[in-house]
Length: 302
Image (tube, rainbow, N blue to C red; front, side, top):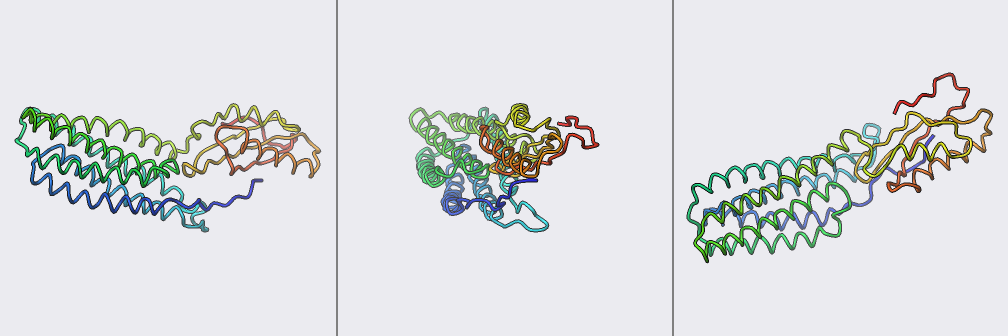
């Protein structure tokens, strides 16, 4: 027995992602030209990071499109998990850029090349302005789902990278200290890598069908077992199809000889309980009602 819900996701902010993709693609081309002119590692790393943003945002746009596909007999939840797969791919790209920047930055600390600070400053400012524009576009939708969080995080990291490029250009221009470029590249890497692990962990949690963060199953079980006519709850499971679609299933043992009317009222109470009484609202729940005299053992499996 379960509640009837629509599996079609709410409209995803695809337009914001497309605008951010267009801005980022333009700046990527600009930064590649700038890195070739200046020879700057910080700008090259920022351009490489911008490339991952271009790829990542294209994945985000694709995932946002796939998420809106309706359920079918083959894909009964639609393609909601495309959001998580897109975020996972973006995190893997970010991790690769971070590791490259760290290794190359350490190498350039010992062999700092000469860099044209004026051109570096110009391209750094262009990159920062573009990233700020993308951030403004994505900001309102950044909490919509993991896919949007990943896209927003990529642009935040790019903005920080542009700040590093500008800082290294100023230090090179004023102090003639060319190692500033390598240090900026390393700092950008150190900002990127920890955030990728956070994103990888969040994506992996959904794919491994872990209990949604913030949902205490022991508290759920206790609350359900306190409802009238409920003897016990077993085989209690909770997971996420996508970050905005938690699900819960349970076997609920009830007293024998409960009327059909009381059983229907109990089912409504069970569904309202998991939807309203906990920090994570589970709108899609499925309960199997079992009489106490049911021949199977009512042991707790989870």
